[in-house]
Image (cartoon, rainbow, N blue to C red; front, top):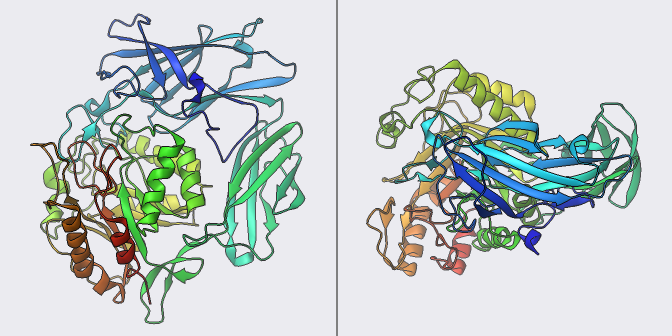
Amino acid sequence: MENMILGENPRPDMMRKDTLVLNGLWDYGVNSTGEEEYDSKILVPFSPETEKSGIGRTLMPGETAYYRKRVRIVKEEGMRYILTFLAVDYYATVSINSREVMKHEGGYLPFSEDITEHISPDGNVEITVRVTDPTDSEAIERGKQTLHPHRIWYRCQSGIWQSVYLEKVPEHYIRAIITTPDLDSSSLKIFPVSNTGERGSAELEIDGKKIRIEMDRENIIHIADPHLWSPENPYVYHFRIRYGKDEVESYTAMRKFSIISDEKGIRRLALNNRAIFHHGILDQGYMKNSLLTYESDEAIVKDLETVKAMGFNVIRKHIKIESPRWYYHATRLGLIVWQDMVNGGANYRDFAVTLPLFTTSFMRDRRNRLLSRRNDEEKKRYESFIKESIMYLYSVPCIGMWCIFNEGWGQFDSSRILSEIRKLDNTRTIDITSGWHDQGAGDFLSKHVYFRPYRFKKDRKGRCVLLSEFGGIGLGEEESNAKKFTYSDVSSSDELLKEITKMYERDVIPYIEKGLSASIYTQLSDVEQETNGLISYDRKRIKVPIHGMKELSKRLVIH
């Protein structure tokens, strides 16, 4: 029963029948002596800082956390066993039966290893993981995490925080599947990657047809009369690939994200070659009892269905990478995702990155130290992380935009990095500098506006204009919070709807016809002391009338 904790197959994009989810109770211990010890139990995949984990203690810089799980495997001749961690924060070392098998740096991306040769003859497997996490004591990619929560900075977390699982595969197996919808040619490009790189044939089953394809090369599959994916009709193609004795199920969708010029020459965001207003909401992805980890698959669905019910067609996943199941549900429910990179660097310099809230002053991003990027090593690591993140999420159908630098934090060489990202992915739009410190490159003028009304202006370079953050109206909970942070406050649910409506009528609706292409409201839920969510931190209260938000949403369209 313990493995029913987030026990669904963790990879809807790479789903095998022979998958053992290892979530549940693990042995746990923490110290600063470097001696491996276990004196408690932790509920994986919840971080030890969370109430849900059963620990409720912060892993401090200089300390090491120890995890241990014992499982028994009935080994089969000719089969391999692949161990995967979807996310461990931040430095992780994994051993099998006391032999080190892998190390990983970074808190948001998966890592795997074939552990077959380390399984004992009797099938016993002891998995141990050592974790350290400096949080904001080092200039690492950490997002909103801090050891000292305040304003828009939240409690840190560490350790295993996404699912752990073991797959049984044959000697030759499918390591990855890369999909690229090409709507203009009514085709789907599928690139199945094998574990050996040796080209061979496989069978693709999609849309009621069985088609021979080649491994380790791009296959172009014609899709007759494709069902187009959109927020109104989120049609998903489920498919299966059989390669020798291996079989993997996955999914994709036929859609196209682009920028087009309308009949007035205004640059607009487009879906499937039609202009569409991106009516979105910012989502930090934090939960009260479990921080960055959703407590259940149902909790993911509930959040996303609430967003849909309010009439939003976009969700901006803010400075966090979610689990594969989150992206699957966003796709099947019909939400366009703006995917932020997980920012990092030295401490956020308020004068350098918040001054544009009150002035129009932007700085050149060669001034790296002012923007919290101190040396070439930090820049190289973040650029590598960007590329890994994009390749990890490349095949997610609902992702329509990459957001690379947010409000200047850690920003550097943005024009060059934009060119590098376009080489990796030319199928999506890219907001290279969301908020400010615009360098004049790319397709967007992307602004964040708080504390004052937004005034639309056409971009002098003729780029597409985004109001990529605004709002932040707070309606606190009944208990007082003297340290709460909002951009403005109201005292009732009806007043919240009234003020939100006034804000859209003032800052958004009049400008859609003039060329505004998107607005992202802050934000979906309260997080810690930031109480400007449309729903409460514990998800028990929807603060704003859903029907009112739905009616407002009907006015946010391009005519």
